Image: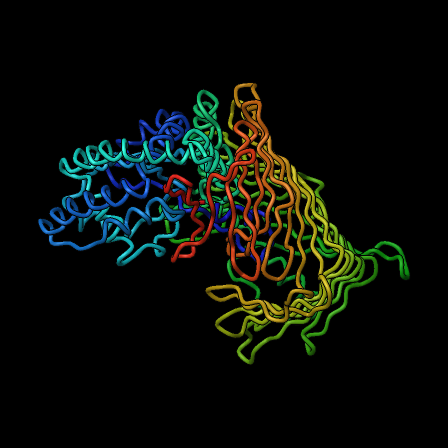
Length: 639
């Protein structure tokens, strides 16, 4: 649940973060388990439901110590034989927390169900191909959590490896035996708990199942390299299998980076194609500015053969229209790898039409375009794997006024740019397709802003952006991914942004984004709404809605997030820190009636789990800062 709100930050200042997804099994183990991913993921919900019931009886306070003791002693013998270290008790806490549980559901017997349909997410410790505990710890250090390996190194990796290894070489059977023996004691504990009116084991089991649903739903908002998988992560049974096959097909295309190393949302082939377009665009900007300012304010890239044509103006006086037409049809090498990837063929035929003559000054390093329109006659780029095309007739942008001043160093290097863009509008229709599989990513975006004034400084190690004014930002559009059969995942969105209170604000882009000048009353406000759905095999598998935005300089609001599938509607509202931590949450299970509520008062976050008028558990942060539900039977669950 930790990163549920970051999908709202679809702005360049605030990067989207992904959840910790991926498999524990590398190499041959990963591929051997990938064949069973479908069946295990499709059954994951039912097994998680039944395991949560047994979990209620196997993780009571009295049985926890017995089980931990068993794990600890078996780990101790394993550790001594392999010469490694690690605390298996802490390892169990870590692997059942948000660090790992977003992908792996611990069955408490050495097996793990897939919380996300990824190869290796479901695994059996006794089928792992590691020589010893140290080798397993090394793999966790290097590869886990998926897409965020630096989050678990040192004692974290050692402890998780120790816990996993405690089930190795037959010790899982003793763990199961211990679990079995403690079941009866926790059962009687649950019975007495029920008779005292603090919540039945059945109610707790249903609440745990619902919390698993919440944690699963949160993955649908994590827009990382597994975005297509994530958006269907709440499906079950045949729907889950059908959607997983679709997700595997399109995610395995060259459009996405799901199968490459390292993984990424957009594949390296698409990045190469975009790089080719960027090189042509850089050449276009440099020769256009050189023509207007009669000085080479920006270095003109060598080796690019694009040409600039300036036909005679049409009309006279203030209504005269001036034309600048740029054309290029060239294969541009963008990297040092194979030609099939690195040779990008770019075709660009664009015109800039201004009402009134553009002006510039080499001495002052500035250019100004009066009312201007950038039109596309032809724009495409491709290598041997993917092709990008912008629909003909699209208007890249139209602006009432564009003013820019460059800061050039003594050795002719660009140190920064001051720019003012007023009355800007854009409308683009872009398709990126996989040449071989015919999978396609399509985006249609329209919108603009009233005013944008920035001062960009690139002279230091960390780029600094001064946002002096931003007003009237509106964007809307559609985004879809489809296969050759017409199966589709599609979303429609609207977004807006404006300065709340007064600026200016400064953003420093280092390892972490530093925001200077923002406070509770003055910040860059963002709001967004979206609807999305998936149609596979002619059937609508799910639909969803999202409304939220940036509520303050430090928090994001989720005004409504709903998902409809299986005849039920799941609705979540809440507020989150920009790091993704829950500040407030309210959601009720449409099936069981279990309700989860979280609030933050005076910097302290607490909550409850209830069903009807009965309290089933309380919510608080543990020493690691993670939200943990403690149920009335003594068992715990991460939120």
